[in-house]
Length: 186
Image (cartoon, rainbow, N blue to C red; front, side, top):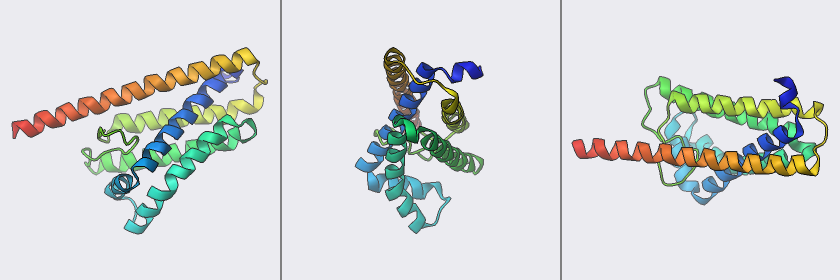
């Protein structure tokens, strides 16, 4: 398994996937700053002022992580930063699931579809953390990618991101349908 994670194509695929994930998250939050502030505040893990600061700063940090992941000299620290952010997100999600606050929006992507927090989202963030750590630990031992390996990794990472976004949208649609059925049943 360790040899697999130092393959240049695999590392590029992981880097591109996580970079696209972070840039998509950052852009969606930047487009909906006030709404994202409400999401952060609704998690009830930070004081109001800190929630405001996080809502303003987090998208910029996410964008910086995305850029760092694709710039090879910055990729290892960016991957460590990505892992740290994802762990913080997992912790915030877990705190709210433990509190029974599973109807709040995760705030992952501001796509108009609310995705309620759940243990599945905690697990998702932990898996993404593992991917970021795989980059951080695998990249120093990897040989440079050939043009073909880099291009293949780019396409694989972009494809993985499209699948990820599609699954997220489907999850949001499912949650919206459930909410509509519940509201109509009242």
